[in-house]
Image (tube, rainbow, N blue to C red; front, side):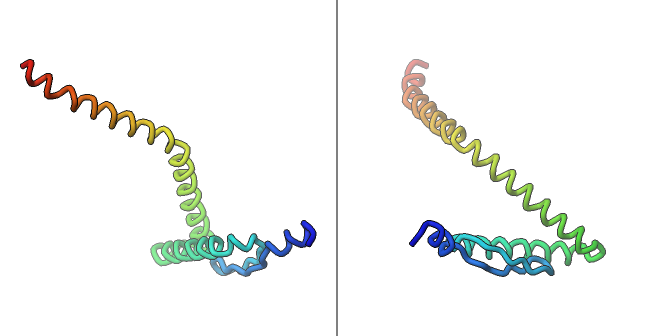
Length: 111
């Protein structure tokens, strides 16, 4: 099997309904579940906005939904970027607290 044939075999054509539009897309097979879950989340959030704000146009509700997901993605990205530092700070804090706990009985004896 050639590399091109293998690449085609790893691809899958699926249809995703997002809002009121059908989207035919080609994805890697192992990502099908992720794409389907993403489409469901978008549709669920869009439905909630449409129910909460019935006077807004479909396009406005879709825009708000997209903005909501973009904000969430950026927050997750920032959180992931600071995670290594957070872990180091937690470790150092635990070491400092442990060192202080060892010194505490001595401090009480001196008092």
